[in-house]
Amino acid sequence: MSGNETCRKCGCLLMEGAKFCRICGREVEAQPEEEEEQEEGQEQAGNSGAGAAGLAAGIIGLLVLGLAAQEIVGVLAVRLFSCLLVTLGLILGIAGLRAANRSGPRRRGRGLAIGAICVSWLGIAILVLLWEPWMLPLNGRMEAAHRSEFQCAMNVKQLSMAVEVYKADWDERMPLAGNWSDALETYLEKPEVFVCPEAREARSGYAYNLGVAGINTAGIDLPSQARVVVIFESGLGWNGAGGVEALVATPRHRGFDEFGMLDGHIETLARGQAESGLTWQPKGRPVPARGR
Image (cartoon, rainbow, N blue to C red; front, side, top):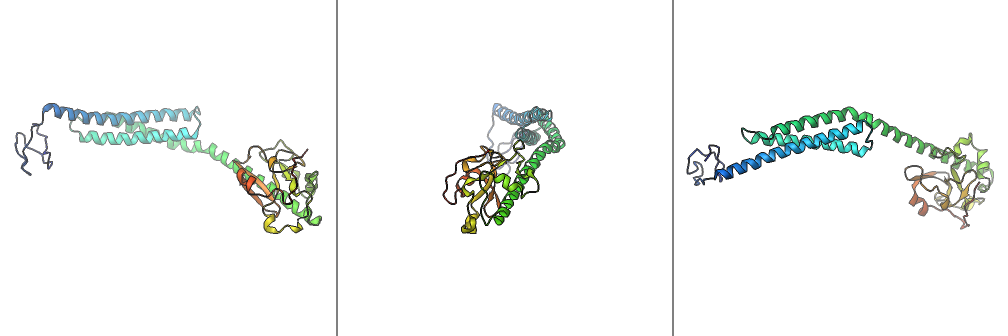
């Protein structure tokens, strides 16, 4: 029996050669030397395994960081994955070091654990230095998308207000479909209002709901007017008019479309809401697409 053996019942340290535990009186069972060596080997293997796993995670995280820093890998998810790897390497390294310190004089696996901690700390330091430069392009793209959405919403709002002024001049009658852009242009300060920031090549990025063309809105109550579409995003071009089928094939603003309603307010809606939650034919008139 080695001098480091403890009682299996109470955990008290046993004196070398003792046959009974001096605390609980339990008889000391001789433990084969091979079994002791096997348990020690398993413990040392566990210590080395944690350190090796932590070192591997830290190194892989550093490699991914290097690719990301060179813009070879530019996906944000991959960069976040490298952050996860170096963090995991640090945790495993600390766990391996603590286990090695408890394993006795030999402390097998301590070097691997220390290596994992150092590599992981290096990866975390690089992440701290590179995080802001990585985020700047993403923030720039998000700001550009917000500006585009805001500008489009303002365009639709100005077109909706122009419709309101037109109605006031024409006894609550809506513009005709064939020349609605020409008719509203006289009520706008600049023609750029017709240009959607996500479709700058087109003279007009908006269309007119054919279902309201030429109708008298005096007989439509305000709650109902709030759900009737007048202006919407489309690729029909100048004086383009149609119904829900004339919406742009793919929403221009991160899955959303801008709509100007009959009461003058605007809404930003997902495509499903636009197709089922809005009124396109308040008088039940046919809505063939047309434009030029």
